Image (tube, rainbow over all chains, first blue to last red; front, side):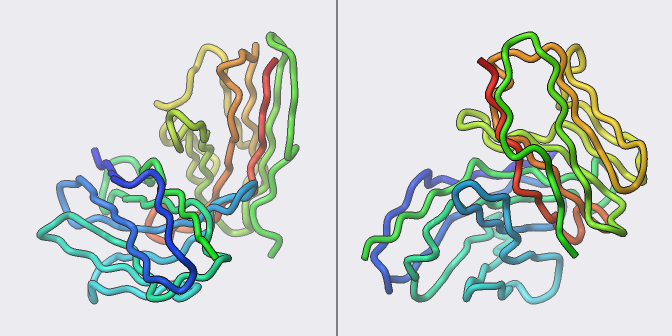
Length: 115
Length: 114
């Protein structure tokens, strides 16, 4: 079964600074990988996804993520953070073939942006 | 499209009462998922449907929870009897082609059982 670890529960950055949120996954084959964002009181919104091909994927709101098979990682990055990026971020992994067609989510990383 | 629609947005009920949560998926989506979010456990999958059939309900406490999808545009999650430990935010999500495309989530139902 697949699993996801987000090592950082809470991260604080200054507005305009760069951001990297870490995600490590466990899965026997090449997984589907996703990043979602959740603003307070809202549902989760898809930022970006990786299925195959180019290991650097671009998403909405200026985010990107890089799939590194050797490290079982899928870290999310943004070169310059805006105050509106303050939210909780979830990494998720999905089964590629067979098994249960579901996503397993990490526990999330809460991002605080200081002015 | 209006997205995934959940109702009610908030529900406060007394322990022992029956609670029904509702979800309308995006038209044309063939998968529907019910997740529960708590501070301690994070997002947990309770049950999911493919073309109205239950595919996996291993995460759902079956003694008190039940989920149905009577048609392609409507699903319910029922808790009877409710307990304080059921207090959480319940999310419905739908997808076309399962995990491959990612989910679209509803805004959630915040359930408080007192």
